[in-house]
View 1 (cartoon, rainbow, N blue to C red):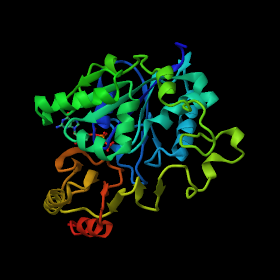
View 2: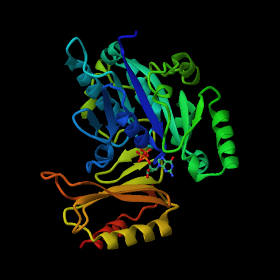
View 3: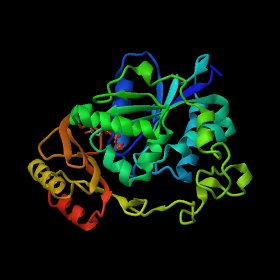
View 4: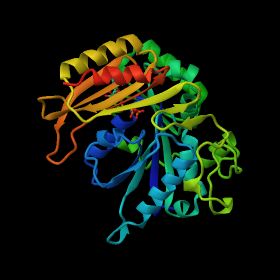
Length: 357
Ligand SMILES: Nc1nc2c(ncn2[C@@H]2O[C@H](COP(=O)(O)OP(=O)(O)OP(=O)(O)O)[C@@H](O)[C@H]2O)c(=O)[nH]1
């Protein structure tokens, strides 16, 4: 048991603070080597690039959504990791999986029980959910995924405590507690938490999960959560995406929709943008449409600037700063992703292109 590599799954709605926690873990002086698996939205690779020191230890699942294709991806990535070795021991001390904000963590957790190879070498240590204290109430009302994430967690970090008052925090905590009576709730700002409270805590409780979801370890073919394996008689990676997974989303060529109306729009440009124009555009856009924009983020090539402008938004709350310089051989380009309801892709694209220097 103890020589199995612990796996921590980070879940939480769009913008709750998963990457913030991940970066905290990776920068802390712990002498451990972590393999990090991130879910990438579409092909433009923003998330991977926002993980500090993103290097050979960060692995991508390229699909932005944890439907069965990504579970296949996850099995492939984890199996690959297990084959690596340091002298006398595995190549990594632990694995951290950051799921997308729109994912139900159940299928990801399931991967560590269903695939024999993965099961033999890893142990699911915990599913930790990040919660955005400011926005979570509305999301618990309107998003099934947000509710699943809270219900499924072994540990909850009630994050962004700086953005709300004490009464709101108490109300949020009471609601989380009602949805998940067992998971300890830790209040955090910028996901600041002692790492021994989130890593290697042995919190995942299969019995509890099986009580809530009896099919957890062995969902039937065709059911949500089913993992295709050798017994299915078809190749997992090649199957057609249009068939019915028993849940309600599909992937388009650019956008990605989830549930009825939440979708993503990815934009990119190979020419530099005018920094002032871009700032004005994003400010005005969030002021006008911030209710519908659940999440926006991007890395911008600003004309006349050597550093990368990174912006992040959760609804109307925008943060942006100039971060590290572009590398000598790095491709300089601007990428942005918007995830929300009723997004007007053509208008977003036109607005973005209007910012060209
Ligand atoms: N005010 C405040 N902002 C925070 C806190 N934690 C994170 N943020 C900001 O919230 C935004 C989203 O944080 P991320 O860590 O990228 O969130 P995420 O869950 O990884 O987002 P997705 O992967 O897109 O779902 C960023 O701008 C963070 O700087 C906090 O405690 N307080």
